[in-house]
Amino acid sequence: MSHIQGETVADIESQVVVRMKKTLEDLHREMATIRTGKASPTILDGVRVNYYGTPTPLNQLANMSAPESSLILVQPWDVSQIDEIEKAILSSGLGLNPSNDGKVIRIIIPALTEERRKDLVKLLHQVVEQHRVAARTVRRDANDALKQLEKDKKISEDDSRRGQESVQKKTSEIVADLDKAGSVKEQEIMAIG
Image: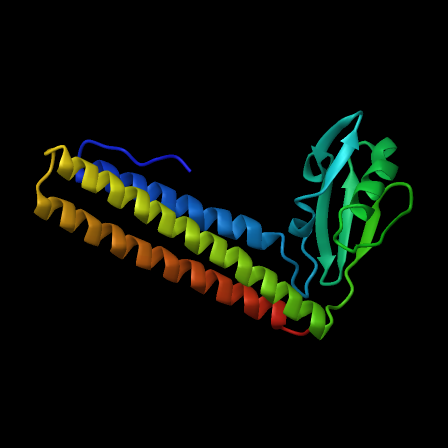
């Protein structure tokens, strides 16, 4: 993580806002790769295909869609790569079994078992906690920067205290947003049918 610096309380607060937003955006990106009961092409976001010797994200080589709640279609733009794409999906560790007809890859998404849903919820909780820790790290960096400004006599003790209270408020808000996003995703994972 980059260190927060600035000449004023406002500089530091604006950096806190930017980094907190990035933390929330990153959580949403990571949660998109956690499977729910419905088919979603985003679960393939981490798949890299060996494209002429270069590991390339699948979404750069094919059009992906979910026409049904239990099916993902992968349509390669270059059909000569269909075997490489299928191999990449099989070796991705997602537990998916693709099948192709020479033009399109079909991936049937099996229903999640209760045990698998619970495992996914545990994974989700770990991901949310990592992002809570990231938000607290931003708070710590900001507080350190405010204390340094106070020590360097660039701001008063009162300004430092007000800045730290403001940073704490922003941290509490972002942690609540992270928890809410995690809760919504947990409900999606646990929803049956």
